[in-house]
Image (spheres, helix red, strand yellow):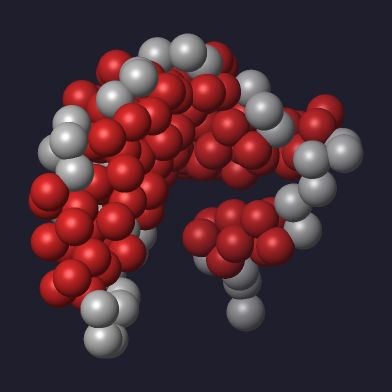
Length: 156
């Protein structure tokens, strides 16, 4: 039985090791070259991001999204692009991207977490705390409503 491309990508990530960047890039390049589609572009961006090469990952994420990247990788790419933008010193771009994202079954409230970080880095600390508390409130069985109310009352 042959192993699918997605299974080999999963195996790649299961064995991911950022202490061997050249080998990781080479191994992912082989997988990317097999497909050359939006999914492959996303994985290529992801390995750069994983290796701390966010500046290289940003245009790759954008290419993958522009090429029609679909679910479930699309949601991950948006979160990862937002995080990478923040990490390269473009938190306002990250805010613009992440503020539009709704929680979903793939990434949950991850966009909200990275949005809070980007808002903080943009000097919008009150808004950052609001976003983080609202996301947290959804998980609280007893005090969610109170935390949401307090978040709404914060000065921004």
